[in-house]
Length: 120
Image (cartoon, rainbow, N blue to C red; front, side, top):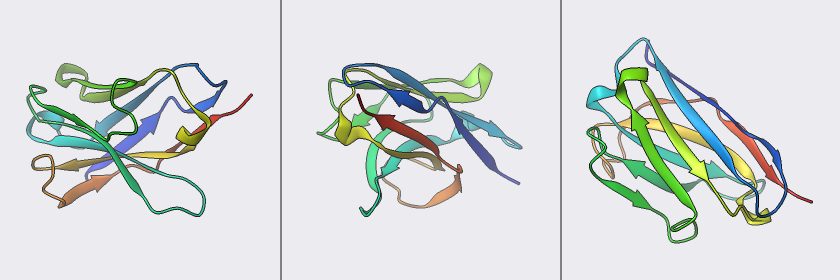
């Protein structure tokens, strides 16, 4: 069974940083692109970023570009989302998902989510 587990969320002050991790179990991430999504209370799920299976291509939503960095370590079967200069509007549950390629919109696995709260 394909499983993804997110971690690294928490409470941080505006301007602070967090690094989220998305770890796979039961399968290798080597052949999957990984996307990060977020959903704030009362809002629809929003795409945040994606990284190709090789790590050679990355994409970001305009709202996070320049502040967030996606990366992967296939040896650790883990994808990361480094979030800097956090804003209150970044508050959401963050999810990762595995897909064949960025933008395929066909996801083979989702994580359970990790809460990020940006507040003073």
